[in-house]
Image (cartoon, rainbow, N blue to C red; front, top):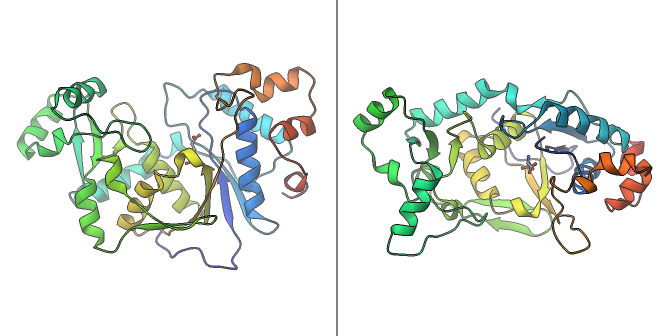
Length: 299
Ligand code: GLU
């Protein structure tokens, strides 16, 4: 999987990677067409189901998403990848990072972390994505304690030791290329020691998305601008693992008339509901802000 950065002039590979935790809404259609458009006439556009969260993802949402995307006029290249079937692959990365002493087991529950932070003298710090920054409690456990607690069957997550990881990649600052804004300097420390394998799932969004973009040869990652900051973690993983550095492009998130971000919970806005109400594929595309049929005429 090792490689170099995407080269100018080479065909672009993009992807749409929804999490099937609810029905698709126009925001998804906008994101999918945005990615498709960036692949242009001779690039590749891939579809990937990010379904690692077995509690929240549903088989029927996958089937419906595929049907909705086709109905609305989108075509993709190759087979649809499902992350839930790739746990053994993600594990190889965890093993490689573990062998280098870059990850550690974390036995803290979410409420224990919140409690610890609130009890600390200083106000808790939040990561750019709004999550609480992990205070590093389990990073300080000794090897014996870790082994004993794992042997006792205590559930644990695996966290990346971000400071140590940064030390390993060297002093040059970590950056990414945002095609609309230029070179952006990353701040992975702003997220603290992120989870790479969850207590309930043996992987995490950050690990899987970075692994798969590299494995699938994605040269341009497009995603909502809410995910811009976390690119810092993805770039760190890429550097640690010697994976290629893709380019990045972020799109605004679609909002409703009141300016609220569309959510999967808004069943009324689902593509399904729009279809049922008699809207044509073209009307749905327009509702998603797509003004032309470029993507529908190019597979
Ligand atoms: N699966 C993620 C989501 O549905 C998006 C993946 C990505 O672009 O990073 O929010």
